[in-house]
Length: 82
Image (tube, rainbow, N blue to C red; front, top):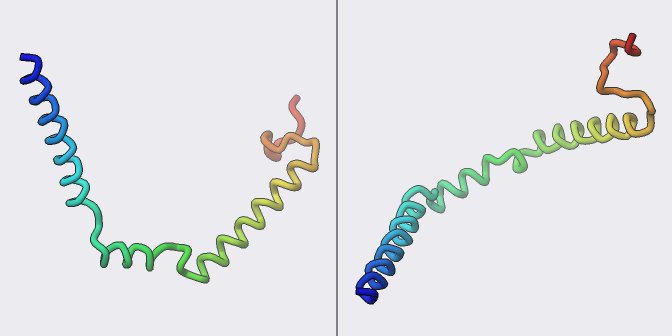
């Protein structure tokens, strides 16, 4: 009985793994679709990359200014608490 249980468990495991692989193979994009996705990534557009670089520079500048000040910038522009 123990041998039969081991065989059935092994068969069920192989079946589940096969089903998972089959589902993965069905839903994964083909080579042509993968190339199209890569071509349309934001990193492939030079204008978009330049905008991202400028935005990153502004964010880093704001972080640097915030690190150099002792003011609590999380309060916003309301001024000191009452």
